Length: 206
Image 1 (tube, rainbow, N blue to C red):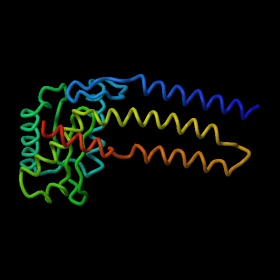
Image 2: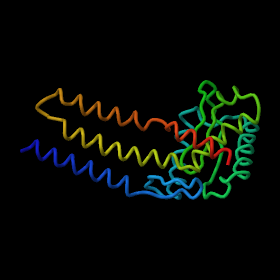
Image 3: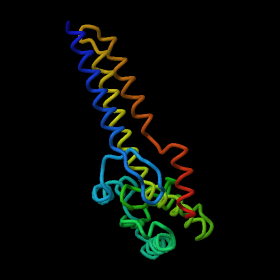
Image 4: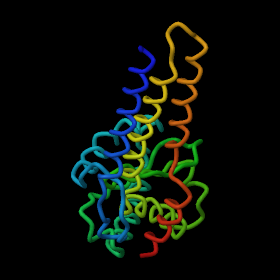
């Protein structure tokens, strides 16, 4: 009887997760695509602003070279003004991170864009810098972070349902299945998909 109750609960959790995901659909006015998102643009902006200091701290904070940091901002804002991103409601800001070892650039929801000093020193021209920043701007306008968050919630619900259905307190071995489900969920949501990257490149050129 206990197993049946667990199974029913798991089915309900999975059903609610799926219905919530598939019913939260909006058309992106800049890309024209139907997307599964469950937050407003204002919430994206607020989330990005809230997360920005913590993200910067993970890369050694902001770079002390104010001249280089200002140039990154100038290049980024020039791209925004010359593309459809300038007509979007997003509040774009561009940051140079102090980390000299990590080669990375990323954008938070709402328009906070970061590039590490480690990547910057590998770029040979302002055109290449513009290409990197433009790619990240494309992710913001295409709302890829909002899509990823919606997918993460769906995955969390489904893996939670799987864990409830398979876990048996009297059988320690069943815990392995719950752990595996959680790990698979994390892997599925770790990075933007190939289609997201390609779309971001298209947005960069728009």
